[in-house]
Each structure stands twice: as structure tokens, then as C-alpha cells.
Length: 71
Image (cartoon, rainbow, N blue to C red; front, side, top):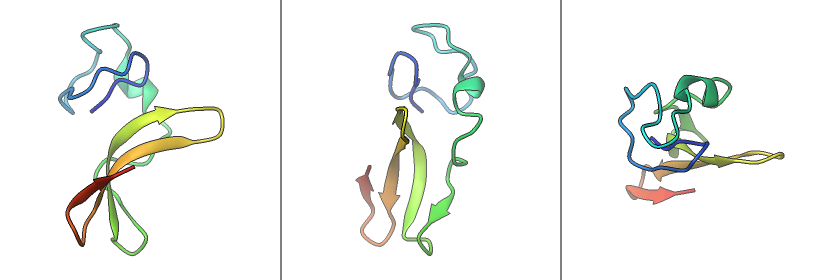
């Protein structure tokens, strides 16, 4: 997982507060796509959000047919 506040990577999915900035992680991801959900007829599997801006959210995902990470 990644903290959307300070962008620290590789946090355990069970982490509640970011160890670097103290942000409450469940609040930062409450309105995002669920972890491990699938899109485009199971072509992409959502891993975690990388960042969010005023117009959208960028996710780290897995292109399932090739097992490649994509954004």
C-alpha cells in the first residue's frame, strides 16, 4: 500500500496510520476502488492507489494476462 498523503510506499495492507506522517490511511482510501478488484473483464487487477488529484486517481494495477504492473 502507499500513503496518499506523504507517498511512502510498501506499507502493509493492515497498517492503520502511516508511520512517516501519521495520516489515518482508511480515511484516505474510503472512496476508492476496492483492493484486488478487477476491471475490463478481469484484464486488470487493482493493487493500490498511487496518487489522487482533482480529476482522478491513478492506481497500480496488474495486467493479468502478462503479469505486468501498470498504472
